[in-house]
Length: 257
Image (cartoon, rainbow, N blue to C red; front, side):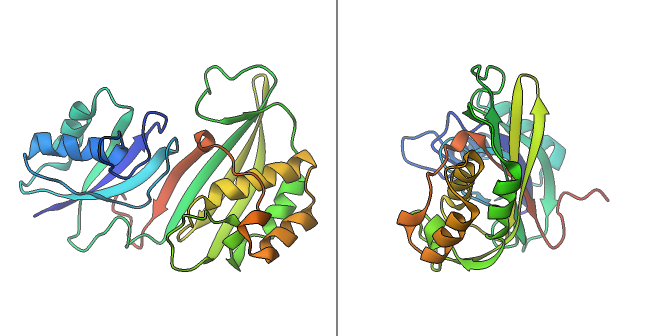
């Protein structure tokens, strides 16, 4: 059975996350239904990350096994046809090695978070950013973010329902930047690691926002990390500003020859 790697983009608002659930709309569920239109049978696809309800995908990666030898172009086009009108798109489809696994072969996941600061309600960015009305101190947020980079016990920033065996993870990058936009300011968070705990990125950003707003100090962030206690975490931010942006592999299956 030939294996195909899919790069997937989706707007997370209408879905109960990535993972298939009985009687609930999910990204995985719609893609597997589209695959069944092409080859009538049960399909199970594997993805690089299981995004939560409302979280978006820019560069989600999944793989599927097909019985027919599909042209990657035709398979991608056929899936996009059967995915209408859902806000899901297969942006790339390639033939992958038999041992490629979207989740277990991944070396790094990159998430992107957007905060929009402006008084007027967001119109064109509604549902795509976390909107606040106050400015944030980027330097203070970066100083606090730097404390999180490296190998740590991230119990404080881990959901109580997280199923990971260990709270110890290595965070490769947490970069905070400021971008001026029409009528407001956006604050971007670039977060990279091999793997993440449940709600880890949203816990980071929600707590960093408190530092940027002046409610927390950098020392408070250090104390929260050292506490290894979920109760020490700041507020968990909403999902609509979060994007699974990119997944890295030892050999990029989407690299152009």
